Image (cartoon, rainbow, N blue to C red; front, side, top):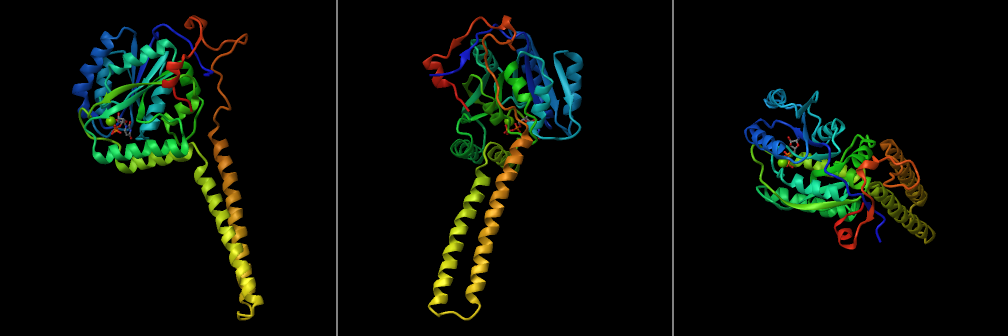
Length: 344
Ligand code: UDP
Ligand code: MG
């Protein structure tokens, strides 16, 4: 039985499309007409928050030109290259829509999928993730590493991270406000959105090849993101060091016992037993101390993130946080919907 309630709502009053750009000048001849057409034909008003993440090419000039010609295009220029997760964060911080869509600038994620996402938003879902059923034009290495990454994340760290879901997603205002409370420095946005909760659902789509330019995510950056993902959501690596310390302690005790036995059977030179004992036991004590220290460091790390302690989705007879006009009543998720929803 689900505890989540869907809150059907009308079309959003404004959809904010957040796009990070890093050296994407080649994409403009394709992106500008496609996105302008999308904005013109959209049944709900949209704004675009374009974030220039310290590009060293013509990207910012092209963005400024576009913004001058079209007031729906809003541009943020970061002071240097901070990376995709930070550029996206800057963009969503400045979005003013009821629904916010995070999408890459390279046209790998088709703009039309946004309409399907808004459809789910109107049903009451707070997070609608684009799930890649096919990835065109990506190298075997990239596909394989992505496959391994999502599976191992789900097994070891964040078991409800939906597989094959990137950062392309729609979020409701209340989900975004919760996300904005999470100011942690090491950011893995898709995991953070999973952590936030609220009714979440995926829409499948075909991921296209990059329309122009080259990937800005070389293997080095992907490994860094995967590592952030792994250690941001679990204390498992720290716990492993504690388990290692415990295992080493057992070995140390066994070695000490063997040294004592050898001593009493008279097979040793004088001084060896005491040396062995001191060595084994002090090493064991040291390792336990490091393990305990690790636990405390882990907790400081958790505290340092300053995440909200809990998030309330609905309330009755208490002050409503949501605009009552938005809600045309509540209903529970039905069984079929329930299967499609993932929960962190
Ligand atoms: N990006 C960014 N800062 C960076 C790297 C990438 O803003 O340091 C942007 C990039 O311009 C694109 C999006 O993040 O809009 C995703 O990058 P990319 O398409 O290269 O990643 P991939 O799809 O290959 O994983
Ligand atoms: Mg891309």
